[in-house]
Structures are given as C-alpha cells and as structure tokens.
Image (cartoon, rainbow over all chains, first blue to last red; front, side, top):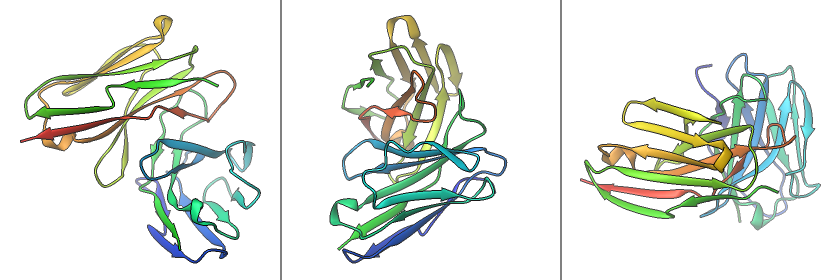
Length: 114
Length: 110
C-alpha cells in the first residue's frame, strides 16, 4: 500500500481481556517495528522484525506481550490479560531494510484499558 | 544505553519566525532521524541524517557526528509546523532499535 496501515485505529477493552493489533507495512519493506507512546511520553521500542524473524524483542514489557509476522508482511501485536498500564498508542513502522534506513510510521492504534 | 536530549522542551513562535531545535546524544550513532508528530499524532519522517547537512524546503538539518549533536532549522514557520519534533538515533549493534529523545513541542501562532 501507499503507507503503513494499522488497525483498529481505536480499541477500548476491559482489564483482563486479550487484544490484537494489526500492522500492514509498506509493500516491499523488509523491516517492521513496534513502538509504544504513552500519554505525554516519548516513544518506547517494543520489538522489530527483519523478514519474519525478530532479532530484538528486548523492549516487550512482559510475557503478556507477543508479536508475530507472517509472509514477511503483516504483523500482529498481541497483549494478553490487558492491564490499565497498557493504555497507550501503539505505533508500527516499516523500512526498506534495517540498517541506515528511514522509518515510516503508521497512524497508530489508541488502546484504552478500562 | 545511549542518552538523547532535545532542547528546548517547548517553543512558541509567531508565524514567519525562524527556529533551531537541538539534539544531543551521548555516544556514536549509526543512524539519526528527525520526525514531526502532528497534532493528530501522525509521525512524519523529516530527515535521515547521520552526518552532514540536508535541506527540504523550509526545513534543514545538520548533524556533527564527531561532536554528537544535530540541529533542525525551521525557517519562515507556519501554523502547520506545530507539533512535536523528535530526534531518534541508532547506535552500536542495536539494529532496528531507534532511541527517541523526549521531543520539542513547537507551537506556531498566526
């Protein structure tokens, strides 16, 4: 597609429920990234993929968070047993490669955990 | 890990004014990018600039890698320039893991 697409744009869930966030990168981009932005905070790295593998998962806050990427394209970030502190904007980005490349961000998923 | 500090934290301008935003980083970097987050939350990549100078319209950026800082210049500011400007760096072997500064909040009044 023309840009990075994320869905849903907004998600309201109850504490304890599981949620899935989807990211569709720019066509042909091999690298895909997930970041999180909490209210008034900067951007926090979660995980990145090169192809379908995730060389760096160091930013995932806990084992309730997982992500996968299939076919070198779409990625899904799953949060199990959501907590109120998970409320944030989840941003996905992609780049043509993973070294010395510009990142292009989607418009994010606003997650609210009640 | 690397520290990325941006200044000023807030900046208020009248339309037409010029401004300089600064990004200091504490270690050598492989990659440095400037982003603009508009009031609707969309992050736009402005520059990929690990060293040297680049210009794009009213915006230009300079990175002096040996002195560990980068500058973003905005000339003849417009209300649409309002938002948050982030500097982000990649260092060492942390491939793919951009570290972001806390941002500069820019408000341009008509």
